[in-house]
Length: 380
Image (cartoon, rainbow, N blue to C red):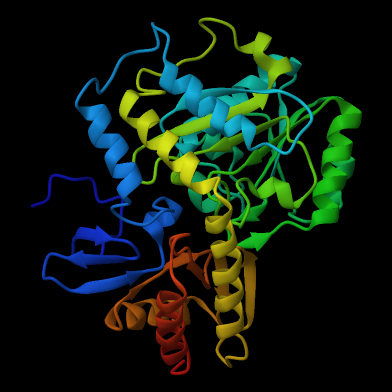
């Protein structure tokens, strides 16, 4: 009998080792990993710079609460803010996960505006804590947990209906620039810019959930750089620590007064080990060659997977790619055959195969993945 709650559908093997774009199970079977731990290990497994930073920090101090100054927190906050293509100053709050980052963003929006109504979107995913779950526009995530936190409205994604719904009573609009769990659905640039304009006109705060799209995943440090907008608040996690749990909520500096001492907190937020990892990750992802690699490997994948009869649509941005298949049964069949061919991939929505390879993946590794994908998809 397992003493774990059965809330995960686990595959019948354990990953015990990883290096670069490859992982091994307990039987020594090697897999090319196109999941990055669900978009977490963006720099690949066993990255030497991150590993060195963790080992060095572990020799001195693992943890200290937020009762004292932390130069590491200041360093990472500066690294994150310096990557924002915006004219205003921003401030950072550290936590442990994407859900916690979104919780902080939602709390800040209500506190700063004095309003309670928040607009989210259908098929969105923002986390599983009560506030983040209530912001998530998927009934399957809500099932059995009601009543939810009140004040949330779910509107069609990429739809002009959102524009009329943003009023002087709206505290915030929260959206993903590529809906990940909902099916790898990119937001349309013109629509995002119109939403941002309506938010500005009504004093509504625009929250961009960059949990999956941030930290280089789309070919720029932050995905909102593709859209020409300046979010009031945005959130990070997943790739920020390359596997070490860490999240961040980043907001315009004018919002600092709404999050004064005692207003919010986290015991482990900004933990020494997490900050050491994040500092190393930020330094690596800020370098142009890595971002160029993301763009080149994205183009390689999109070109290599086109014109397959089993594929209805290819969509995404950077190394966040969705392959739309005929139905859920086909998706399950494809994922099973991919594992047999020693490639790991993910699902998104009911019939989308999601590819999230490490940002450091090579041209040769990408070609190997394309060959496996084409071979399996040709059988559907």
